[in-house]
Image (tube, rainbow, N blue to C red; front, side, top):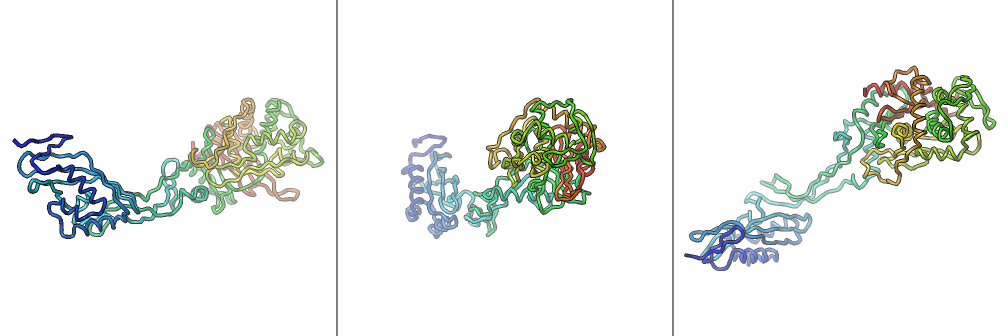
Amino acid sequence: MVPVLAAAGAVWALRTTGSPEEVADAYLSAWEGGAYAEMRELVADPPADFERIHRRFLADLKAERIALERHVPTGVFAASGASTGSVHFHAAVQGAADFRYEGELKFVERDRTWKIDWSPATLHPDLTADRTIRAVRVKDEPTPVLAADGTRVDTPDAPGSVQQLVEGLRETYPDRFHEGATNHVRLYEGGRPIETLSGTSEKEPVRLTIDLKVHAAGAAALENVGKPAALVALRPSTGEVLAVVNKPGGFNRALLGKYPPGSTFKVVTAAALVAGGAEPDAQVSCPAQQNIGGFPFRNAGYKDFGTLSFRDAFAHSCNTTFGDLTVSRLGAGRLAEVARSFGFGEKIAPGVPAVRAEFPAPKDDTDLASASIGQGRVLASPLNMASVAAAISSGAWRPPRVVAEEMVPDRTLRPRPLEKDVVAALRDLMPAVVTDGTAHAVRFPPGTAGKTGTAEYGSGEEPPSHAWFIGYRGDLAFAVVVEGGGAGASVAAPIAARFLRQLT
């Protein structure tokens, strides 16, 4: 009987000279060194163009070198007759495209010597006489941008305002959107690529927080508005921006527009007053006009509400009340401090370009009274003011974002919890605007809280004004502005109501 050796799942007949492992090691070593003549000697029936085939293989891969390592042999070599089997190896091609693959050396017995049973598949398992493997330079696919539900939005059919966000992303993350090329290894048959063996031109997508359903509701709400307008919606519990709608397009006024916020800023002023001791049921005075710091402040329409509760003064948006209380009780430093807690003066980094809300230090009592009602030099975007409403809804101001939290370029801004008493009071005041105050004539869904704003700009006895409405309903906060739209109660509030009704 001819002795045999069984190891690692293989049975090698010992009547032959040497061993398959020794032949494999010699072959792979010669291949690494480009010693093709030595390789030929180890092959049973080498083709006439053996060396040319191997040189072309490496040239097609634009290889600088190839590293080869034998694995444990597999297969069975019979004890008698024509013995066959195989040894597996690992190949690492280094060059234009680093390429790793698993190969196989098949053996036959010839004259009591183990020989490589060579075929094109010896170079790579997928090779045949009609196939080649090449390293090619392929232009990268564009980085996909997805909405929150996974819908791709970097396409021509995406809403125009969302396309603006995509452009903003490219500006913020140029490295993620770099248009380059990648080396790929592809299998060709008859000159046609049939499979990519290594490399990909696909990039990891960037996912926006935009909820297309919420965005569509915002777009529908602005559909018939005849003046430039914007709507922003976000999720108060997380700061995620759900909708950014601009009409018309061209300028992202929702994130980059700077407007006096008008009486929507009274949410901030009321928070400061409540923190200083004001209570919703406290009695205050609301004359039609009042001189503060030598300048006459008046209510819209010169309305005189006499003595009323602080809650009603907020609901009816009494300019004279808020201007007087701010100067007599708060002072510029305290109002500025509370404004900062709502994000004013902070450079926000939502993932796309956006302006910060501005609260310059008031220069005198007149300037302070103007600031308290969102006039003078106070400026904010719809995104800034939606964040103010969201802070009351969730109990904390959160920096808004349109990308995943880990992608925010500057995460030094952290959520800022508001005082519980302040939150409780504003959750009492803001619903009163809708049920009993300036927006009571508008048909809002139940549970809506908000604040109207009519922000004057320009000059004259009756200067033009921007129309504002900010608010929240459940875990949804929003802001609407209509440039030169007039009164917030009659112009912006109905838009906000249409937006909310689209979602109920």
